[in-house]
Image (cartoon, rainbow, N blue to C red):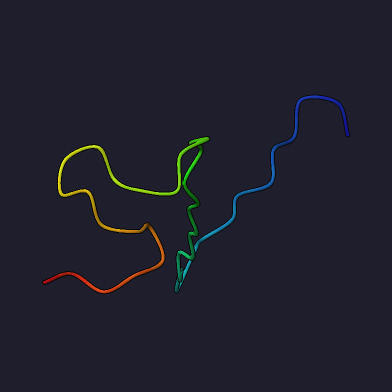
Length: 40
């Protein structure tokens, strides 16, 4: 089977992502609100 290839057809794809703050401070440097708080 040397030289043979297998082809795959993707029918659907659902991307999932997550993010976190990588800061030592507890407050935002721009708005000075807590990172886990609500925006004004």
